Image: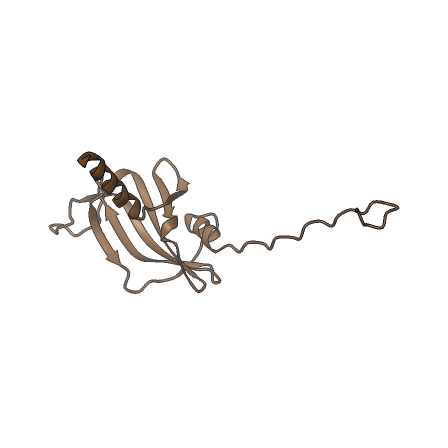
Length: 155
């Protein structure tokens, strides 16, 4: 009975935590880029979203010699992006790197974000099209054809 209660309590805890909803945006032999659909936040015409780049192999952290970060590596990078939809511009608000085990290596909030034009056919362009594209209005259904020789009343 205790095992069932523990299993039930653990299941409820797991379901109460909102999990990331990663959608692959771009993939090649070197990296996989994903966006977390559960992190999408709209603020007027701006859209913020977390993206994650998983690298095929670890890379060294760019750091000054003999500092706590020298010699450390990362295998995954999370970016908090903000897109200004009408202007077709994007910036990074935060960057977090992780090692092979998922431990945070570096974490940086961008003090003065700079918005840049979104390059066509880039990962940023895929984000823009996924999050900012306006849906075309739904056309009305076609008119019912009239049967020759009838008044249009089908009763």
